[in-house]
Length: 460
Image (cartoon, rainbow, N blue to C red; front, side, top):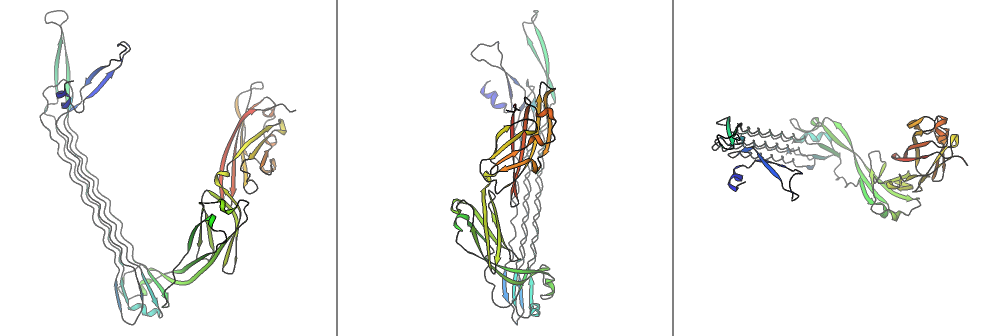
């Protein structure tokens, strides 16, 4: 195709036909199928900028005195989002005159989306130290939230160009006029109107801020800093005592009735109740040394009930117990098992037949003295000599505990004791077994599916 024609057909579709009749050089026959867009489509409009979030009100701590106090802790309003720009109009240009292909008029540009409105700022929090609760009536406080910003409007899409001439017909002749090989054919072509650009979507409104919260403390001494949570590497915790502290608060209703009339603050307020302090330590009784558990974090938290909660990493299963004496809480670790070692069961032997048929499973990680294990089985059988031409499910369900024997880290599943037809337990029967083992420790559990396929052998 000539370069000038190629530049005029930016959307020309070309279909290439490969044929075995062509030379081995890999020649290709290509035929151009009309799909030209003339002119220039309009550009899409730019989306509007999102509005900025409003600034939160200032948090303040004061001690009530004789003189009145006027505080403005209001949050700022969020900004409105900007409107999206309109889509640009296309350049329609001159419609090509009777080309031998279909053509498309230019599309209009899409409108830009409206920007999202900014969130309103929260009202500031106020902490008040007092000796006489009635003195709080001297405090006038406005801790109003900022209003949300409104979303910008989407820009309008531009109208696409219309065709000046919808269709036309072109006659093509081959051969020599007057001779029998002279033939003419007519083909109809058409012009398709350009599409209108879609309107941009409106931006969403922001969220309104929250009212500021009042906290009150009966006393003038500032509350000591808190350390309610400590996260430490498990390998480094041996021999250490962690000091935890927490300020406990009661949640009350009626904050507006405590402060000066006309004040604006959240109705729910906090009243200081007590200072909680605990010391925590770990006692390690797991066989593996604690130093082998590097990069394993443990988080210790003091709750409002003066209990210490211990959280280990998800990939570490820990079995232990907690005890308290005075201000000291001790957590004794009896087992610590990497999660990857929980599901390392494997079939070791498939033996006997009939009522004595059993499947032996071994725990390769040797952790079965600590982990509880339950088994569920699905057994399918096939025996070409006794009518089982295809595999047929002969048992599916939980294996009762009386049919499971554990010898240290080896489990013996007495499959022959299950409710399975006797003909499916005979020597020579092909079986497919799927075992689902559920393993659990201290509230954590994981499942492992074990599949085995073979033939029931004759008893020796």
